[in-house]
Length: 238
Image 1 (cartoon, rainbow, N blue to C red):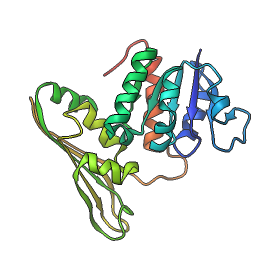
Image 2: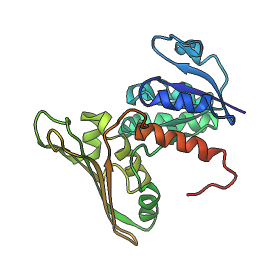
Image 3: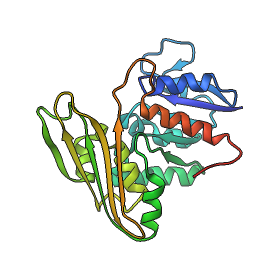
């Protein structure tokens, strides 16, 4: 049974914690929380004083920036907070930490589908990648909130481009990936769209994200839980 630590306890981390506790292949070894209130919740020093086989960061870009180096010194680290990796200096520090410890940072796709296709297309010489995030409430009014480079978007809207950075790093890179953020107005649909040209194919992915309701998993939490299940299967798909 592998010991897992989780950073965070919010709407994404919560379902992940419960999934680990109910899975016989994993043991919840600790949860890093700012204000611990349950027996397995710990503040940072106590959390990092335990042993882990895997640490999952599910608290957002600031948490990854704060804890990644320390976590990688102990165990493999999974995250969905891709936006902070658009910072070249931080990403290089993470790479050095992983090289020194032998542990790896895995950036999960979150709510974005199509990562395998983007990576394969890039290997074949992809030349363009455009990502569009449309979500009600992104701006003060309906319309385009941002249009430009993904690197600039990551600095201005870090919580909105985590999946986009994962896609870009899997594909042609951050510097040649463009990002558009659109507010469709009240009642509009939440969509993630990905368009890529080059290599051996043209990619056109359109994901409609349904509003969260009682009993439904957050799509980012679902991606982490799916990765945990996949890690214990004797046959890995993808």
